[in-house]
Length: 355
Image 1 (cartoon, rainbow, N blue to C red):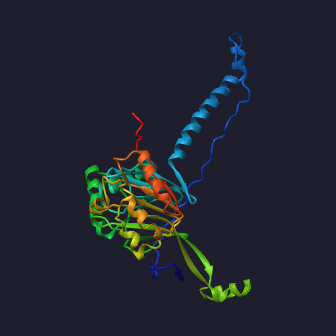
Image 2 (tube, rainbow, N blue to C red; image 1 turned 90 degrees about the vertical axis):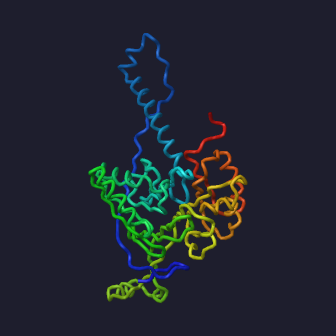
Image 3 (cartoon, helix red, strand yellow; image 1 turned 180 degrees about the vertical axis):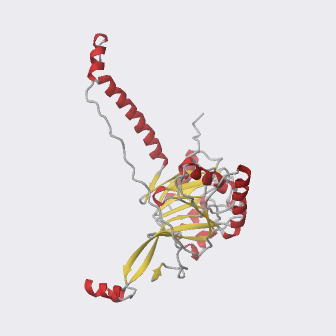
């Protein structure tokens, strides 16, 4: 069986895991048409008619729709994925992709991350890994299956010790499948989904992740055959298909702009969606400052924009010194340099006009 993806060597055998998210059903909506204003002497008859009950139901439904709209507002729709989360430089980062049942980094373990079955840790800074024990414990509290947590091999032993320490202190079970996945290795999340780490450049050991969709394609030498002939070869044990990997979502975590120039990052830079950082946006913290601290300045993304072939970019990890208006202004400048749709993740940031 052949795996085809440009710029990568053939991967090792897959590990296996499967998950299926439950479907969501919206409750029925009650619509009132031209309601009359009740008079004081007709309250009793209105109660008997169920009119006030209908108003109560409509108000409850309106409140529900408001709450639901707020949840939807926090998610960003990009290339078929609803991406949500919180990412404030130095405070916390956790980005969630519900369609893939995965979270990238865990920050302080936001409630929305608990339902994700797969967690990808990029590095060991507390604003990216601090919520890990709570994430594992909360899934156990709700009787969810133990999560699969991916970490750079350099920190696996320390993470094991961290979890064991919390088991001892809290006298609780903390169950998880901890996977040390190295750059270039491949892990099968589902039969149609795999993940590979790629190298990033931070001040401590770090790596990003690319999630690929998997599909089978008939090999060229068999495309002229008819259905029965193809089936006959398949039954005889001949491998008649290639496996095609298509990069869907890439997440860098904290990194300098060096990853943009690394040929091994090619799949991350052609994924449908690239989730990457832009910690600094102005001249008060220049490129040299960004590089010294293992981060990117948005000017560097603009400088190297020619290498970016993604359809959409979600920018994260802005410094907390910025307001929403400053973030949007900087992102507008980047939009003129890339063909991709560019969206900033601004949840948790304040407007300069707010009190």
